[in-house]
Length: 152
Image 1 (cartoon, rainbow, N blue to C red):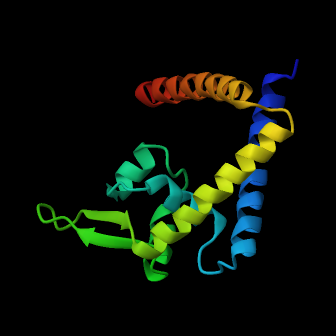
Image 2: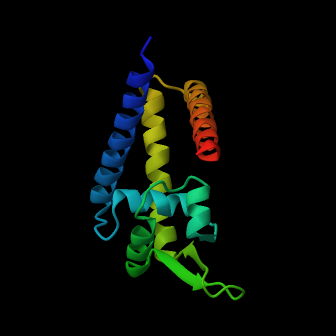
């Protein structure tokens, strides 16, 4: 059985590898004006209209440079930014038509990859079970950070 640290290390490697796979797919599609991290943010936003804070709270983006990435995606035409009518300081973001087109291509990629994963021996039941276990780990870590922040 892998140790706690080894499990953390595997998760970190998987995250990096998933970003590498996403980069390869963007290259295959000939998309050069958005990077792998940005494309995952775009995919996560979907049909929602969010503030930067909501994007982070929902776990769609974990990082210190979310504003930079959003700015770049707006400049490239993947996102649309709108100021709130009620609070002029608040900015909401949503996926543009260009972003929806890329998101549709990413849907196809995820479907294709899921089928290949099933062909390699990991079926829907195993994937669901893995997701459940990782969800437990996520909740455990969230409870630890919440406790630390309240004590801090």
